[in-house]
Image (cartoon, rainbow, N blue to C red):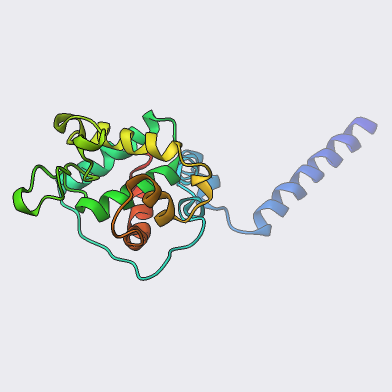
Length: 195
């Protein structure tokens, strides 16, 4: 008799638990298909935290250009070089914003009379200033790694506004111009960092 009462009690509790689950709310798709829920969780975990990309907020009016396939290829090469340099997403934002200002992400060859001395490549780096050979500075990976090597030498670059960090490496005649590209650079890093 005790076994029968115990069994009925257990079944009754199990029934209440089941009914409570059913009546507590609809079954979501995540519960109905755990494979889909897992895939969604993986995608969300891979997203870049944009607050880390622009920790100080943008400074001033922002500019934006539409990129072609070659410019996008250069962005991907720059991100790969940043990872190879063991630097983070913020370093990629700074380098991409710098290259947006310097070349609009186009790998510039010698521009003749329009050339700024012997500046070439994504960052308009100069062989005569020790950035490397023409062949090296027109290689997006090499040029980015050279820029990042300079950035690493800037004490506290991680805590600086983008334009200050970029200017310390580039020593441009237009030191505030880098700031206008921060939003687009951050968007590009967010889009391509995990590709």
